[in-house]
Length: 127
Image (cartoon, rainbow, N blue to C red; front, side, top):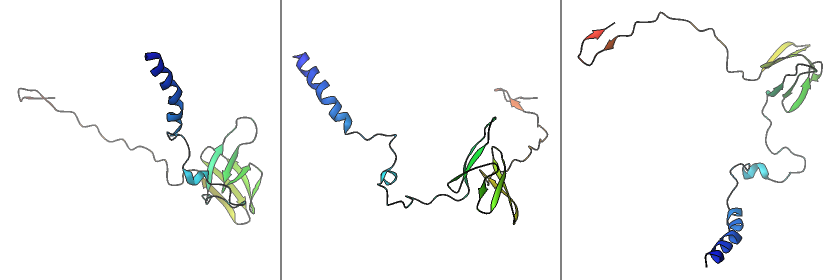
């Protein structure tokens, strides 16, 4: 009798598991069919990613377009790519596009350390 239940459970388990949603699957709006060459959503303006290579040309994706050092982006030429920014030069001057524009590094200001006062359970303070 146990073998019958076990075999029935093993037979029905895959169909029950197939009905569960995959937690790693993208949302439905991202899985929508192609709309005839029109982008599914707006591409965020600015730099999306940077690829820094030790040997060879580094690259970046800016406004959805892959660029390397020496290539053109509109009327400007890419002159430098680092891990956090891309430098463009053109007729309008120099432009720096940062990967994370709202974060700026600032030096840490050290303050004097105050001595810690510990209290014993008897109520007498100790330094």
